[in-house]
Length: 344
Ligand code: PA5
Image (cartoon, rainbow, N blue to C red; front, side):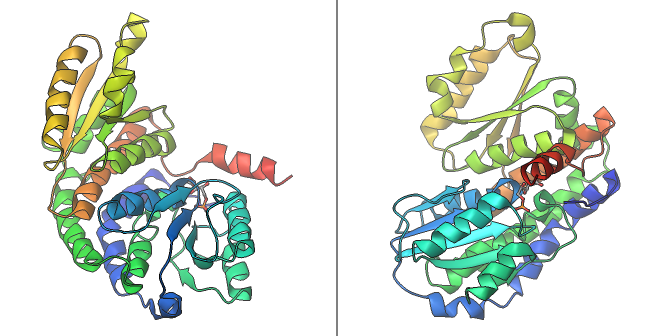
């Protein structure tokens, strides 16, 4: 995707994230009403910036949806997909080959399909098959369109009667993010700007981002991806409690490299009490071994407001980190190169 934009554009996209949710709340989803039925399962299929909205949806649905949901990041769909499946095919550009292939697989398996895209081949294929296309605004890079790549998915499920309360949760998300951005936007100096402070901790270090299963897992995944794509730096993520059963052992050697790790723990007031205890013990274990351990606390009440509050701090921190490295956060030349080579 050839979008040429300077570093300041990414800050503008971030500032407008609450506006994306507001825009989605006004969208008309009546075209999906014909797909209301009893489904056996739901699959979101997409890649990269177009797949993470599926992960947010998966985590959101974990305690709300009575049927299984999975996120597929491949050319083919799982074997269980069939006429009783709902497949949400998501591609910002509409031209990602894995997603187009998965769309064809969904069609062959007889699934109900809804496409979410700005256009491209996905929109053409879905229109030819008379499948609903939810058209989202273009002109962004996929990771800057996270509102557009998540909110329509959950609002469609709400429209189909599969989940309830999503609109209200999105409204709370708008309120929380609108307040939060005043504290982390570029005008705020490091001593009162949590995202700038975090970026300064990550500079010249290897970021290790930890979330917690069922609360901040997807936010940790997003932090990692945003550091990779915006700052062009390596980053890794994992979740409690799983990391207490393997990763935590791996902080012994090589000592000089372990000292270069900067750990960020994403916290949620609703984390399980035993997880809270685990985090405290884990911090003790890490003391003196890594460069730093910092925490970021979720804001708001609903899962969506809390998740996006964590994501928002990470998004800004990744752009501040790009600034510290003197890197333009917007282009992702390596992804473009790979896509071009694959098209040869
Ligand atoms: O951030 C990116 O540019 C990528 O992760 C893309 O989202 C990914 O390559 C898939 O492309 P698209 O979102 O257009 O389907």
